[in-house]
Length: 267
Image 1 (cartoon, one colour):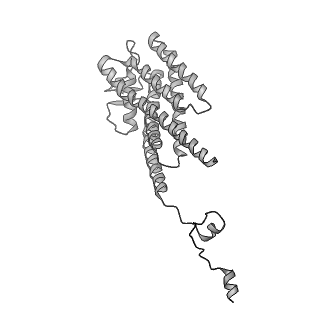
Image 2: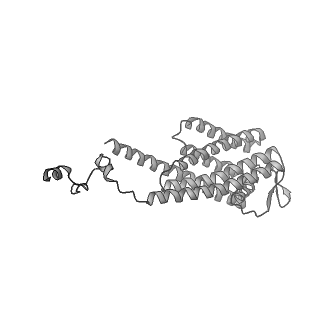
Image 3: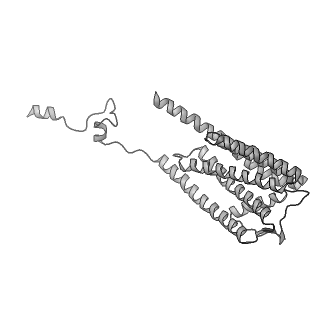
């Protein structure tokens, strides 16, 4: 009975994680698609706080089972409210605090999901979706770090030899460009249209490229290893293991060893 309850609990927990990871994956994909489309159609750099808020809420949902869920919720609310207020009032200081809180929240979510991938024992849809979420979160975290760096050190990035700056009429428009640069760097595409300027920006870009390649190699190797171990047949137990009660014998199974009692009686 205890084993049955434990298996049901694990199944419910896995289904809940699958749903939470799916919500996060959907919000990340929506951010990547809607941000450049909004920027191209309506000059929608101001839509960046809205899309980022959706990702932050999804990140809190993913980590809702953690003991720090309340703290994460407070940080998410502070980051979202601060981001909207900074866009409305054009307050650089509040924007920096909001971005720092959002970056810390997404970084913690990435760590939690990466830890769950390391502890996984089989290949499941939850494992695959969680792995994709971690990869996209790495790119988004570095994009937010690039935005912060460009605000603290203006001119840290250039596009077509022109410095990327935050314009007063559209304060978050450059986030689209730096998000694009982050994922180009993560995938090691290297188009060259956007480039880091300065030692700190170059170090961040190189670190992202290394992390992206190492993560893909380790994650794929982890999936293959789990799949092989999952498909490998269990070894047939020896007679000693069955004799000790570790593996019960089948009803029609005969004892492979001779009956010493009958043998002594015959003698």
